[in-house]
Length: 430
Image (cartoon, rainbow, N blue to C red; front, side):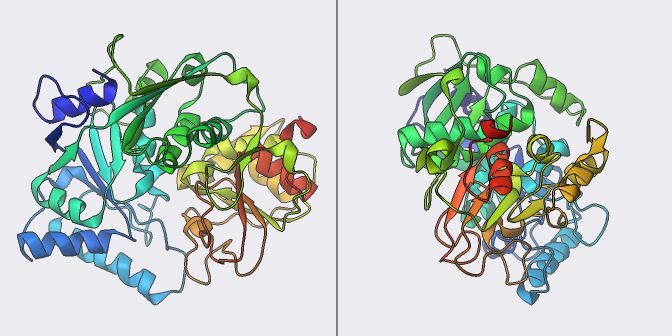
């Protein structure tokens, strides 16, 4: 069996499963946030009763993150709904934006706070829950109805996905990031190329990646239609998890002869910095081919592009240079925000580098403009601004205005483009 099949088989109490099997699985973690949390709570209370208790207080994690730093009354109402439910249920894992428990974007905060463990089953009311496959978990996005059912029972009926295996060989050039890797793959197979599949990533180039870069790759598996993205947990992943939690876990690994519906092989040394053109993540193009695209703003942030490794990469380009367009910076979590002040490149903190480069003030951690947000959301588009962004989606209206075309790229490419004012291959500055 594949790693995905093994995790699901164990969660179902079975010795084996096959793609297409419909099975009931026991859930290890249910994640929700301020956008979908109120709806999930509504389903739970309607189906199980207003006074019902969640199936396991220790397994429900609620992380408000999407519409946080805003004056919008409806956004505040959503968070108030979560607070009331948490208080009634006495839930221990609620990261309230009103106090020091707040952490930031759920997909980065969940592993940072030790809630992601290899071999476990995680469901979240957000499509990018597939991020957590970077640590060897089966992790997938679901809707409010499924989440409400899990909240009451701790179980979910799912179909075992087929596996698409991606082997990435060779040594990764320093101008290639996880974003370049996943955009190339999505560009090749298309935004429906992995529909309801498990995208399994492996190979020497994957094993050499830091965890944050693996998160970027798994995060965007859903942009090819995948049910989950996953990477077998090596020592790097196990060390990351053990630094953050003392809870026991049991990793799983694919059998050497495990079958995959499709197998793809890449030589990463041949990759080039790239972008996804508007209006879909599969619209792949080498950055060097789009030098005539003039930009209005650059955006570095989100669960995909707002991790510390992303800002370090951007800072290597921006150090000693000036941006020529508005450049928005949004750390994913408080841990990342702290790192911007402590991490240094040749004696300069990242914060100082960005300030001297002329970037706009660094926003507090949240999803910010990645999902558009209320009118006063930091970085939200309001007109025909042409944007290059480290986020994961570039659908029409994704960052606010329906008139704003969005190009997706790695932090290196976004930073280089911010300096040039046009889409720019970062090798020009490396």
